[in-house]
Image (cartoon, rainbow, N blue to C red; front, side, top):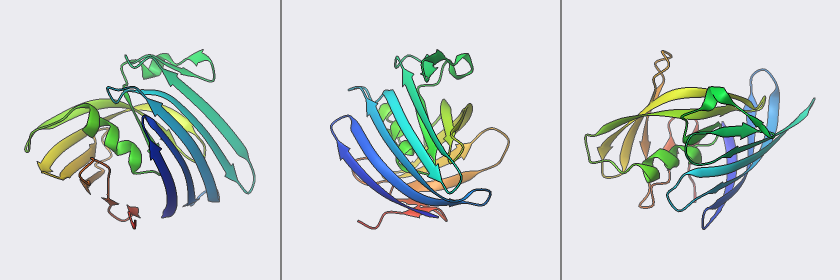
Length: 169
């Protein structure tokens, strides 16, 4: 569980999350995301603070699936367009914005998955199925079997991530 304060402006998101990790305990994640007019991420700046460490990570992408982390090319992320930062539900909105789907349609994406508080990065296959006007089924298709039904608002921002987050304002 966690609490996120997210500020959105044109092509920019600034956020601070207070969350809990079973291994590291409570932590604070601050992130800033920028994207282009086609909803393709361009830069992600992240900083995590726990009781025992502080870590930072900057990811940049050309919007065509080529990534750099802290100035070095990350070949393992080639082909990823979107980012999914745990523990925020906000980043699940990027595939929804970038690839509009008809009700009943399913699409698969190769996504950069960032796990806080360690700020580890890896490519992860994910699937989205549009179940209704404002409802999507999210699936990790990495063999874990994880899935969640994600209701979104009229702007495609996730409202509720069952058992993890619920938007209150």
